[in-house]
Image (cartoon, rainbow, N blue to C red; front, side, top):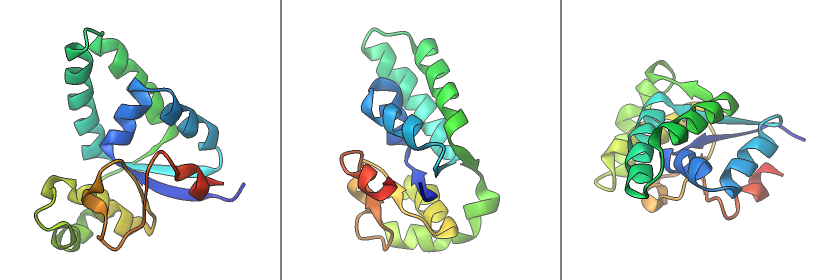
Length: 139
């Protein structure tokens, strides 16, 4: 299997905890692919996951433990990697979702596509993959 790389949006991490398929994809391809997650995306996933699970009557602590376990399948990246691409990422995103700039900046810095369910990245000059078809890229 050839090494492939993707930057993961926070919504992918959340889907990997709440669902089965996304987690299975991460687990299956982790040995032959690199999954990069900006630290701020992990923080966002932790925040939203706890709220979503609590609203559904679940156990936020259990969901956060599963998320922590999934972090072992990804490589965390900080502003030292993507920070110098902030201006370009913000320009490309415009008013769509300016808080997503670290995701786009990471993709620009690492030269790889984004795995997301968020259409805000469409038209930003970086390939995007959704969970529905990301295995095409990974295979």
